[in-house]
Length: 194
Ligand SMILES: O=C(CO)[C@@H](O)[C@H](O)[C@H](O)[C@H](O)COP(=O)(O)O
Ligand SMILES: [Zn+2]
Image (cartoon, rainbow, N blue to C red; front, side, top):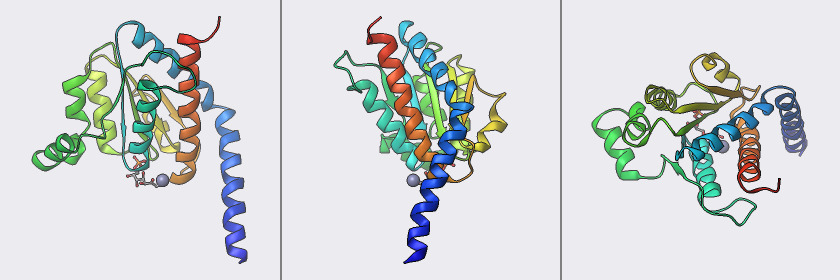
């Protein structure tokens, strides 16, 4: 029994500690991310977002919040998750390379008005990094939401938010918190009261 209680308590303590450390540093950058989306939207741009595994789910979750709604009843906002079209994903992975699954979609869809958000807990997944580099080459605003490993990418992209942890599940939990803050900021900036 005691290892189960320890697991719960240790996981809770670790999450609280990481959220607090994120808030004493990186979390403020989510405001920059919100402003970047609003700037992009006002120029006719859109959000393109992607990641692997749990972060693929995050990308889809974010796109749904934008396209449908978050808190407010408001007009739809443009956002696409590049993790959903199995024909596109399997054909690129099969004919070329799994590391190109986001890169080729970015090359097909991105304009310089867009904001492109890669999500990777390691901050190192080649398909995510290649996708972001392709977006940068097209002049889009590039952001990486990562764990501590993302720090190494700080010079590569416009914005890197690196949750200070190397533990994938805890990083993912903080990512979802930051993603929801991102939605709140965008909705308030575009549709909130003055
Ligand atoms: O959800 C989890 C673990 O919590 C996994 O599915 C996890 O997302 C996958 O292992 C990913 O491939 C990890 O990739 P990344 O976050 O390092 O880019
Ligand atoms: Zn997970």
